Image (cartoon, rainbow, N blue to C red):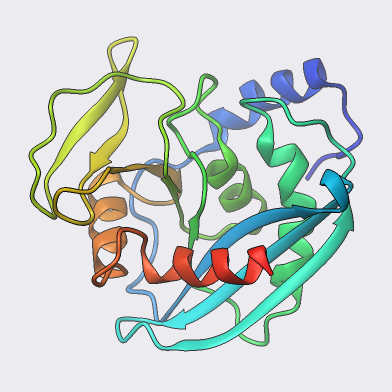
Amino acid sequence: MHDWNLTPQQARELQQQLSLKVIREDRFTTPRFVAGVDVGFEDGGATTRAAVALLRFPSLELLEHSIAHLPTRFPYLPGLLSFREIPAILEALKGLETAPDMLLCDGQGLAHPRRFGLACHLGLITDTPSIGVAKSRLIGTHAELPAEKGAWVTLEDKGEIIGAVLRSRSNVNPLYISIGQRISLASAIHYTLACTTRYKLPETTRWAHRFASG
């Protein structure tokens, strides 16, 4: 889709261009296989370690996982993490025997200054419905969130709804959910909760984090 050897300014400009290609509505059938995606770093950040965990849906049975290691070629810059992480994620995806029907990414989607976080970027490249499931807020404001599991409020920026703040477990810090690609916000919330059991993180993300952390 594009060259990865970009300057930070070129990367920002590319995000602006590609954000126009994000499909913000449901364009998928009920998934049979969902995948969690997470990235860690080794050798003081010199090596990117990407992990993909594939689960059967809706049982959430872990079927397989794939790990890829690549040299880290892009600096750590807030808002540009996809350029640092996606090359290794794409390699990890190649290692799966079964292609996922939906991706749950540890990162932002639409909830991004240029409306093009990692979940949007990865979903667009792979043409796979994708969801941003972030543990922290990058931008946006929201109303007070009730304490019970399943409660959510909209996350807004400059008058636009860019995501949702979701309580995935009662009385625990929330998750920040946003559209990646080919999915509506309502469906992104639904599938995040459907992949969540007794823990804060969805099983997809929990397994991927375990594999990405070594």
